Image (cartoon, rainbow, N blue to C red; front, top):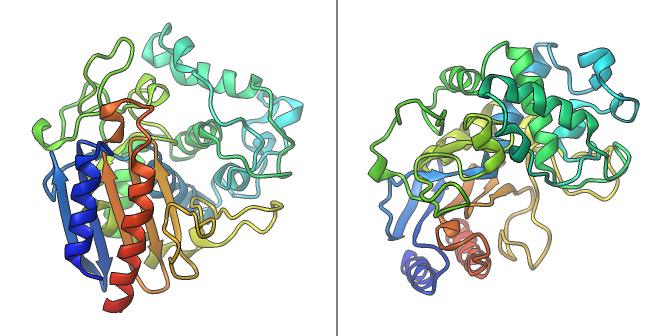
Length: 341
């Protein structure tokens, strides 16, 4: 397999309507092995990373606070928030939130209520709604992917750092020696020219989403949250991921406490032959998807990985043409990376 096969598959996928813009990066031995752009993208196009925020920002920030003993992964919400926590959520831990095992349902449109309040009051309202949210299952009994759990984790992190997640994330990157990805707080100047950022289409009340978080709950929180909000290029994602792999191996350990889960404390793992990571990732691969059309799959032990960034949602949230492209690209990509090892 070769870069030519990857380029052909990527360009055909974009031409067939998978996304208007796409960048594919293969990383090995500390640098890009191959970087390909298609459609309305260049190699350095910036994308809304959506839920890649969970493993790239929320999880490592949580690990920092665990290491410092400020927000230990085995503490309970009652330990951390006291009487404000209802009985059904008292025993939830940050570790369970990280591993999607806290019992929260996948999603709620909290933005509908938050948008009715001044921005300064929205986080308090979010915490109240999270504390009153009926759990989908008992904490620790199973894993269920949940934006809500990471919204709660984001609030815990902000309390632990006594600052916004964007500031805490930037400080962590300085310690790791990397630059980007970045949060883009609403109302602040963009760190890149707007034309470098891939647009994300439209939603009710937001006719053109460009340079701001597509996720409504994140946007209502000012563009900075635990579950979404990061923007970046493919190279930035890979360089940040390599730094995490070298400094924070705890993030890749399987959650052994929750029955029948393939998740780690921030990442997912390939689910078998039909995985979007392809049928052939090396054992020990971890990764994550982003709703806007992004994905990251990484083999920490060898420092190899694949980053695919697209703006799938620019063609509508129901555009489902990306997943077959994801599988085929990753199948080829792992073969190329294996040959380069």
